[in-house]
Every structure is written in structure tokens, then in C-alpha cells.
Image (cartoon, rainbow over all chains, first blue to last red; front, side):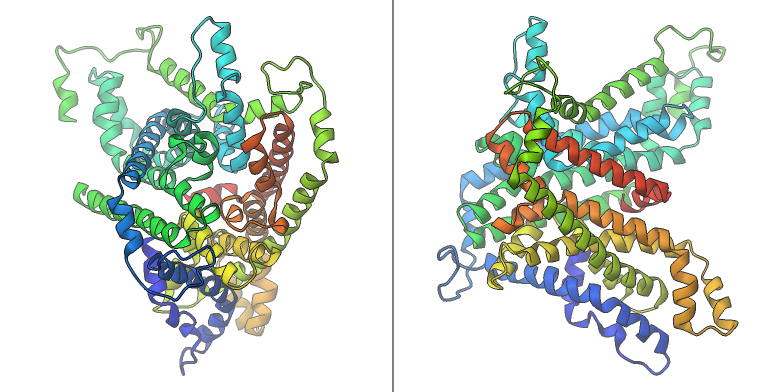
Length: 303
Length: 285
């Protein structure tokens, strides 16, 4: 997203490399190869974003926005002065933070095993980790609906054991469970890279000196994989903030489903309040950008 | 490491394999791995099992097994239309994004321009922009153009979302290609376009193929932006299923899901045969 801001600033210069220069003849030829994709991306990605930015400063005057154009900051004021939106914002950030934290914790053993072991189960594990990523989003959510619904698999099992049943569909907990499953693979990949770079002899020497597994984890693995932990956490947090299909399907129309991204979708499709939906999505983007900047600063400080 | 030193109370002998307790950290690790893998697999496995249910409603375990939901799926006109639309859309997207993205990847690895960074950012931006942001901006844009709910709008949206994957994969392929081979062809008398077409393209053909496959899969599975471009002609199979499961909970979507999983697995299997899955993952993440 940070890069996006730069690219939009340079829209007009986009095809500039194609400009003929006396000594740059080969470069100019290559510039022509760029035209189809740059043209597509500017016309159908950057321009719509610019138009949407304009919309976010317009007053809502009916579904088709036919009224005279006045630019106002009403939409942004509305977001920050209505307690309802603060609540949605808060819930979004909490859900994303919980999902990211759980995902990094449960991804760690998997990433560690993939980085260290030469077991024949390794290939199978890679397949299992990649599977959620290549499974259709709707399919995954449907699977969770089958498991989490009131007379779903989980509750049938709990009843069989004589335990009290749980209400998970249309709750925040359900949304967190489903989002965690989808996003854990990203944590595995970002942790895998850093764990692989940790010298196994460090772990050996801690053990050799009488250290327990806890010492290995606390004094070797966590400090040395901190960059991967942080990167994985943020990658998942950002995606959890932006997720909208899972909250919509698992969270439903109630509070649990009301997150920033679902708010944008409902405003866009149901109430057709595009100006406000545009403002909400820019607020969402701004939060994501601030966190990415913060992470960059944290990583630099760590070095 | 200073912390490790602190733990030495007495000169303990290094723990040998034999002296390890029965339930040591390796067992804990194995248990954790099994639990997490089950968690990751659960919804996918459940869907596949459910699809063979003979029950009218969702229940676990199914009281009997049948293929009735597959029959229902293949006899449902709307769902079949959705499947055909999805396949057509994904195919066209793969070709268009594959060509445009590959051309861009060639240019990006060859030219030295002060706009290089900017061009690269532009080509990866759709990948990192939240889906709702892209979706809403396209809804507003295509409504203004009078293209809302059209196949064209859907195709353009999917091409925009697929170009980044193609560029990333083909750039990776080109970076591992030894450029001096192409230069050798030129010094042996081939013109630059001929060298490019007869030496470079065949060498990175597999990257281009897997990029197109990835674009196909990306389009075939896309729901986020597609949901923002509603219309009778934009009901792809995943979108039709999305709407169905919001109101019904019977095993029909399980049959659809299993077909979708099978198609994805098939495509990934083909891509894996090209040996580029690892490269794709490494680049994307």
C-alpha cells in the first residue's frame, strides 16, 4: 500500500520510459512492452481509486450520486463522531490482533518443524499448510459453517461427550476461528524463513549447557526469529483488517459481522452510500499504512 | 547466551538421548503439529465428507451416503451457468493477464529506468490493496461507465488482480535465466527480436505457463471484487455459492465445494509438475 501511494503520484509519468532518448534506444523498445499492463493498471486501477477518493469527499445524494458536486469532509467527520463507528473500528482491530497473535503462536511449531526436520512427513505438512491458501474462500467458510453451526459437527461431538454445546456461528469467536485458519499459512511462511537462518548449533549449545527447551525457546528462537514474528504478525493483521467475506458469512448481520470491511461492503451494495463507503475504506487503508510504517520503525530500532 | 550460562547450577553432564523423559519436547512438538494441521485441514475435509451425504439437511455424521448432491448440482441450471462463466472468465483472464504481465516482466528485467521502482510498485499494488478498496473503486468506476454487472467489467477486474501474480512469477523466471545466452545469439548474427523469440521465450516458457495457470486459478477463485460488481451476468460459481450459503445450510454447497477443490488441486498439480510452486510461494510471501 505504501508503494501504491507513490505510484498514484506518478501516474502521468507512467509511460515516460518509452520516451525516445538518443542513447536509450533499447530501453525505449522495452517501454513499449510495458504499455498494455501499465495502461490497464492506470485506467482500471489507479483512476478508479482516484475517483473513489473524490467520492469520499462528496455528500450522499442518492444511489447514483446525481446531485451537484460539493466537496465536504462530512463523511470523515461522521465516522469519527459517531460512537457506532468507533465500536466497529475497535472490534476490527481487536479481532485482527487476536487472529494475528493466535496464528503466529500456532504457526511456530509447524514452521520450526519444516525448517529443521528431515522427516518424511514434511512434504505432507507443506501440502496441509498450502491447502487453506488454494482452497476457495467460500468453500473454507462453508466448511466452518458446517463445523460451528448450532447443530454442526462440533456441537454434535460435544453432545456425544455429554458436554454443554457452544454458540459459535454469528459470534466474534467464530469469526476469529475461521480467520485464523485462513491466515495461519502466512505466519508459517514468514517464520520458516527466519528459523531456517538460526544456526542449529546455538540450540545444541544451550542444551549442552543444561538449558531446557524453555531456555532454547526463550533465549534462542524467539529473539533470533523476532523479525519473522513481527512480519508475520503484521501481514496477518493487515489481511484480517481487510477481510470481509469471512465476517459476513460467519459473523452474520449482527454485531459480530460488523467490521470495517463488511461495513464498506454493506454501504456499497445495500444502502448504496458510496461516499461514506469510500471514506470508510480510506480510513481502513490509512490504519493499515500507519501500522506498516510502525513496523518498519520497530524493525530498524531492533537493529 | 548469557542467560543460558545462568542455568548451570552444577557441572551437569549433557542430557543424553537415553536420559530424556518419556514425554520430551519432541513429542510435544509432534502433538502441536498434529493439532495445528488438523485445524488447518478440518473445514476442507469436512466439506468433502459432507458432499457424499444422503441427508436432506445438514447433519453429522450423515445417516447415509450418496451422490445425490452432485446430481443436484449438475442439474441446477443456475449453478452450471455459474461454473461455465467461471471457467470462461478464468480462461480469458489467464490469456490476457498472462500476455500483458509477461510483456511487462520482460521489460522490467531488461530496462534501466529511473521509474523502475515506480513501475514495479504499480504492478504489485493490486495485490496488496485490500479487496474491499479495489472492489468499491471498481463498482463506482464501472457504474459511471455504464458497465456495471457486465462480463467486461468482471474481466477487467480479474485481469487487474491477476497481473501482479504473472509479473512476479515471470520476473522470477527471467532472473534465473542467463542473459548471456541471448547475447550469444545476437553476437552470432540473430537480430534482437529473433534472439528474444527463439532463445529467451522458450527458456522462460514454463514460468509463463505457470503464471497463466496462477492467473486462471486466481480468477476462478475470486469472490471479493466479483461481489462488488453484481449483475445477472456476473454470478460466477463462487459468488452463486456465497449467496446460497448465506440462506441455506444443506449439503449442496459441499458438492460444489468438492468440485472447486478438485479443479484447484488439478491446476496446482499441473503447476507443480512445472516445478515452480516453490518459486511462486517464495516470491509471493
